[in-house]
Amino acid sequence: MSSNKKKVSITNLLAIIPDDELNWIARKTNVNKYVKVLDGKSVFYLILYSLVESQRNSLRTMEDIFNGSAFKFLFNLPQDKTVKYNSISERLSVINIEFFKQSYEFIYKLFSEKYSKQEIEKHKLIRVDSTMIAEAANKLKKGMNIGKKKDGKKQIKYTIAYDGNFPSMGETFTDKIYLSEDKTIPEVVFKYAKKDKDSVFAFDRGVQERKVFLKLSKDKTPFVCRLKKNARLKVIEEIENGKNRSVGSLELISDQKIQLAIPSKKQYYEEPFRLIIAINLKTNISYHFFTNIFDGNVEEILAMYKKRWDIEVFFRFLKQELNFSHITSTSENGMQLMLYMTMITSMLVLIYKRANNVGYKTAVRRISFELNEFIIRLVVKHLGGDPKQAFRRNPELDRISKKEEGASP
Image (cartoon, rainbow, N blue to C red; front, side, top):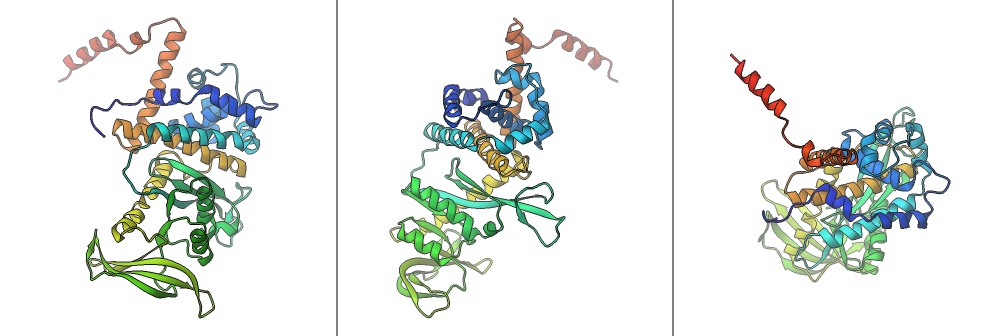
């Protein structure tokens, strides 16, 4: 990013989210029916604020934040409203998830149109991957058991699609059948492909089921992943004999058109696929890249798969900076809600990070500082003062500082 690019503040970003649109989504989803305190917008802003303000967000943290004057000043909420943490827990378990889903989809579209990087690429690449989060078994109403102990832990799985700029879709899985990536990643890919026919999907070798690959090709959904080295297959055409030519940090062994074997049979599926085998001579490790894309060269295919790593970096950011390694709500509804709100918050942080040319940790810290400074300005203005005066150097502090310096040995 060029140094003369105008920087963006968190208040600039929050101002972009139109209040009228959130009100309209609230009315459409009927999220505020029979609710006086924890309405949809209040919960929306409470979680957003909590994610950037707290290193380890919790229901009690959200209780303290909601009952404090600062949060209410910032989001223009009545000062006399208060809540208990158990009320927040109950509300998260029953609140209409559609309000948060539609709010996320609207904000994603809004920010994508305004802040997406302009990359000159032949394909729109969607990286898809999953992450597991564990919690004590007695706390989670639903989850995947770990081990045989009943008093052990349960896991939930979040599968997210990431477009290189922002998280573009997310699903929560709690049933044991979804432990396999052959279940979760394809479910997100198929859903995404229905709404965007022009995307290419990159995912890791956790997906290996033949029926998944066949459906992707039948639906004309392009993908690139890795195939297990012991997969049964038949080579039907050699596209290129690699002759160990360099492809980035790898050397090409072969580029082939293949057919996959039908399980438990000596026959092969008619659908053709492409298998690119390359090796890292330093480690002597070979890689089998697998795709249904035939109109790109080897370099393009490998470059697409390499970009899959972006989602690993994104997950690390969510867990380290936005508390995503911790389960705040233990209900299934609450967990899905927290996923939507974490994705919304991540978009704000990612835009701020890019616009101000800082790291993830610095972006979150500065957003917190800016919000608190903005709150002070609002309070001063509310009390009839000049906000500029609140941030001028205090002469008394200068006098005390000089006196202390003079007393130093």
